[in-house]
Length: 461
Image 1: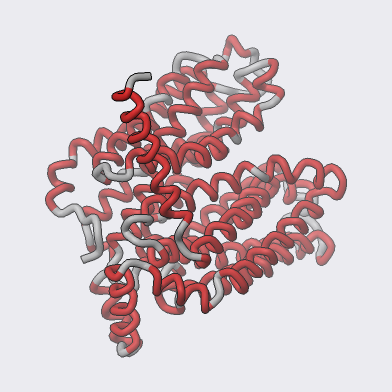
Image 2 (image 1 turned 30 degrees about the vertical axis):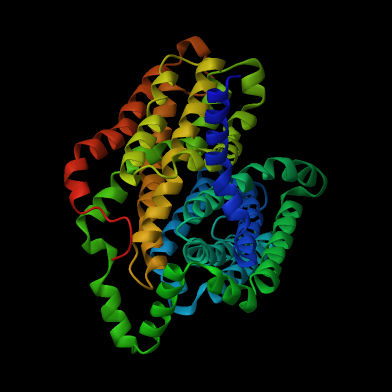
């Protein structure tokens, strides 16, 4: 290797490694947030993955009746973030995280006990108790998610913020992958309720992490160690809000409410088309890989469906390190394009290589834009409004889940029906339509670039 090539290699290696090094030297409190996020990711995705079967086998609901229970939980969480996202702005990071975890603990205990506490069947006592458990989880997550991102905003410096958000997003996806390793042996030995008790225990561990690692002392020390710019901002926020009456706080919130910003509205809602690909990960891919493929893929379709989370865990920090200095809006255009474009690869037909190409390229695109979007929402939020901005920033995700679920079943019935010989399926047209839906996001972002850049915020004003 020539000296020039060695120099280029060292430069690239430093560019990739430096953000990791910077993040590693941040606070104990931020480490606690990340650690808790792994355990909570395992628990959330682990419960969601078994929920329909749980309602089917233990609460004795039919497939049609059990399916909406997942929608009730996932859609309810996103809606709760819109309503409860401001909690962290009002009571602070640590209290918000503790409150959220206790709500989720109560909800998960109630959900796990529901088969033994009541009578099974639709709208019978077990069903109502289980739904009460889901409500506890919904309330907890409505507080938890905005609080976690608000914590990253306050506990990082401008130098470490991008990697902080990227790691949080990556760790969530690591949590989404690990239940596939934890759940099967426990389920075979103790049933789904046995698995749920494991997740209850992990929730207790999460509370312990908040209590002892994200302690008052640790948070105070972390705030003292952030840059003068960030520290000053936090102190200003405390002083400003401390002297406000409840009426003045409400007036401040209404004046700075994010829905008043047309560019903010456009930016978050135009992401719905490309976000449909997230929803297809559980609405379409499991049935597509089990029906349109044979042999190894069909027999191991869970592996392929869960490749996205583990790839995100690996790729997100690396992609973020390489693109950390790039313009946010341009990264959104490029990232959504890279995510949407490989959908057209699936339109070539069911094939191991087209499937792997789609999963890999789509995940790279997701790693390029999704953490940057979450960082952008947090950083443009005015003083003491990070939580509500994060909640509203997630609202289109709620709409995406609802809208995609309304038509995905029809497309599967028409183009990828069960008990149909593979040569008679028409999955190519299905993915072609999905490709055109997803690609409309980067096209619209590109066309609106001139208008958006005129008043595009990158920091709170």
